[in-house]
Length: 509
Image (cartoon, rainbow, N blue to C red; front, top):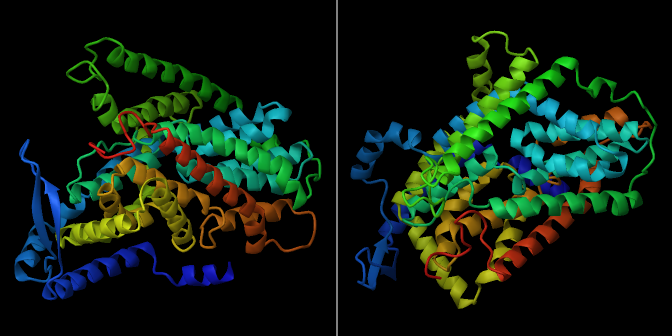
C-alpha cells in the first residue's frame, strides 16, 4: 500500500495528465503514420444488403498543416461540443440547487435518525449507497451521520464511520435513482462510441436495472461484513453518548421544509404521469412506446433537473431557506461553482479524445485488440472479469472515476464492441472495478475526512492514520469486488438487460 501511495502521488494531476496524453497522441500519430501503420478488416456497409466490405485504415498524421488548420478553426467548438461538458453542466445546476437548499442533508438525517435500532446497520448502508445522488457530498454526510448514530447506540462510532464511508463509495455502481454519475459516465461513453462510429443505445438509464440490484447487494454485503467480520478487527462497543445526535437532529424549519418538498414532489409525479400514462403522452415516442428511445429515456437529464428544482424549491420555501426570488439563481450557481475544476479538466480531455479519434488510433487499437482477444479466445464473461480486475488496479493510482473513464473509454468501448460487448456492458464492468477499490485507494481525497471523523471518536492516544483506514475498509473492498463481479456474471449468464432498452450485446450478436 505504501508503494501504491508513492506511485499514485507521483502521477500528474488530471489536468496535466490529459495535456500529456493529448501531446502524446499527436506525436504517436506522426511516428506511426511515417511507419505506415494500418489495419485491414471487414466492415459492415452503410448500404442495406451490401454485406461486408474490406476496409483499410491508416494512422493519420495530426501534425500536418491541414489538420492544424482544422484544430484552430474548431478549437472552441471542440471544447463546447464535448459530450460530458454540457450534460454535466445542466445536471449540476439542478443538483447544486437542491443540495444548497439543504434538502439532501435534511432528508438523510430524517431517514437515518428515525430508523429502528435492529435495522440501523442495513438502513445506514442502504442510505449510504443512495447518498450518491448528492454526488461526493453524500459520502461525507453518510460517514458523519453513521458515526454519530453508532455512538448514540453504544457501538463503536469508528465502525459506524467506516460503514458510512464504504457504502457512500458503493453508490458509484449502485443506486435506486439516476444520479449525476450516471449522466457523466454515459456522456463519456457516448463520446467514445460516436468517435468510433458505434451505433448502440447510450443514455443515463442504460445501467439502471443493474444499479438497482447492486444497491441491495452492496447494502447486504456491508451489513454482513459490519456485523460478522469487523468485530474480529475492531471493538464493537464504545462510549455510550445518548446526546451525540442532538446536534444532528432536524429543526422545526427543516421538518416543514421536508413536508413541503414532499408535496412538490407529488405534484411533479402527477405531471410525469400525465406525460407517460396516456397512449399519446408527450413523453412517449411516435409509436406510443418508451423503448428503444423516447422523450422519457432521452430526456432523463432535464427531467431530473426539473425534479430537483421542484423538490429544492419546496424544501427551500418550507424551511425558510428561500425567502426571496433573488436567492434562487444564487442557489443554482452552487453546483456549477463546485464543479469548476471538472470543467477545467474537461478542457484538455476534450482535445485528447478528439485527437485520439481523428488519428484513427482508436480504430487501430480496437481491431488489433479484438484480433488478440479472439486469438486467445478471450470473450464473454472472462473478458468482462479481466477488465474489472484491470480497472481495480488502475483505480489505486487514479481515483477520479470520470478522468479514468475519459482515458479508458476511447480504447475499450470500440475494442470490446468489436467482440460483441455493447457500450452499456463495458461501462458497467468499468464502474464495478472503479467502485471496488475506491475505499482503499491511497490517493482518495476523502481519506483525510474519515481520518478526521475517526480522530474525533477515538478513546485512546493512538494516532489514527492511513493504515487504519486501509485495514478497516479492505474487507468491504474485497467483498464488493467479489459480489459485484458475481452479480455481473449472473447478469451475463442469463442475458438480462442492463437498463431500459440496453442489451448486453451489440446488435446482431
